[in-house]
Image (tube, rainbow, N blue to C red; front, side):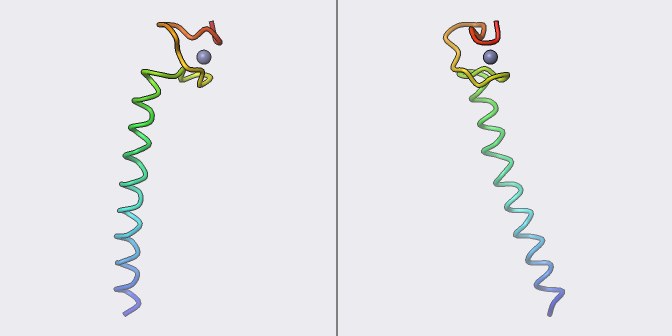
Length: 52
Ligand SMILES: [Zn+2]
């Protein structure tokens, strides 16, 4: 019985990891377009005016 609970827990954990990694990847892709990956400043041009 405890083995079943452990298996269910492992599945739930895997689902959490899958859900957690997806939005994170989306944020990284979004940041690449709107914010500097180095300092997080919103980009107003092709180069970050904070980092230079
Ligand atoms: Zn920057």
